[in-house]
Amino acid sequence: MNVLESFSLKGKVALLTGGAGQYGRQFTAALAEAGAETYIASRNLAELEKVAAEDRSRGFKVTALQLDLGSEKSIAKLRDDIIGRSGRCDILVNNAVTRVACGGWNNPLEVFDQSLHINASALFLITHLFAEEMKKNKSGSIINIGSMMGMIGIEMGNYDGTDMYPNPSPVYFYEKGGMINFTRWAASILGSYNVRVNCVSPGGFGVPSHPAQFVKNYCARTQLGRMANDTDLKGIIVFLASDASVYLTGANIPVDGGYTAK
Image 1 (cartoon, rainbow, N blue to C red):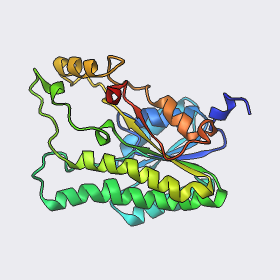
Image 2 (image 1 turned 120 degrees about the vertical axis):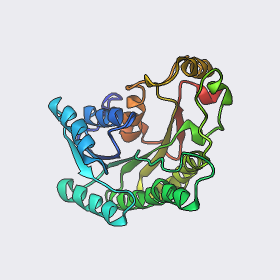
Image 3 (image 1 turned 90 degrees about the vertical axis):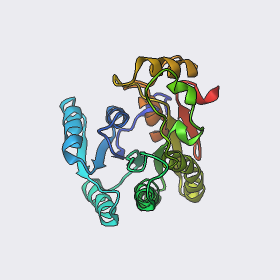
Image 4 (image 1 turned 60 degrees about the vertical axis):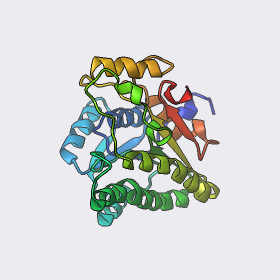
């Protein structure tokens, strides 16, 4: 196979949880532009449909479906819907996340439990259900969307000279750090079925609401001198989803402008 052809996702079916957020929009576009029949799923079906409609207007096959990661029945129904429509699922991108417990360290236990239920327990279930379908075809790629915050602690200096306060909650760091090792575990379990599991750990995404001083501090902490934009992660998603990465599994790849390399 020609090396460029190995990046093609033509003939493949992909599911991306989430899809309307900062990174989700570019993940959706990346999968669709590479040729995959793409499903995006979350609770906010109206927002997802806007994304799907925009990509369909460009000639791509993108379908928005309902998903409540807090419900086992909803996860199973999504699996059944996709298999019923397309007969298979070759790519799963675990991107959706809840941030209900990010308000502080002093959250009550039930708030932490709610976060862990969706960001950890539901991650295990949806990965299992779709991996079982991939195992039937002896092929598949699962991509977990982590964060550089799962690799490091808080850089307090990023907030110098601003009125921002660093996120004091441990749960996001805990969940994203755990996702990296879950990736390794799942890669071990699924490798004999030729199902690959990898993790992408993005860096900070630049938005207009960021104070100028924060942006300056953060950018100085990276090696490329900037924050991520709305296209920076498209390439890594296509690479990991495609046969171009056919011998790569169990890896965590930081895409953070060199932030964690310093």
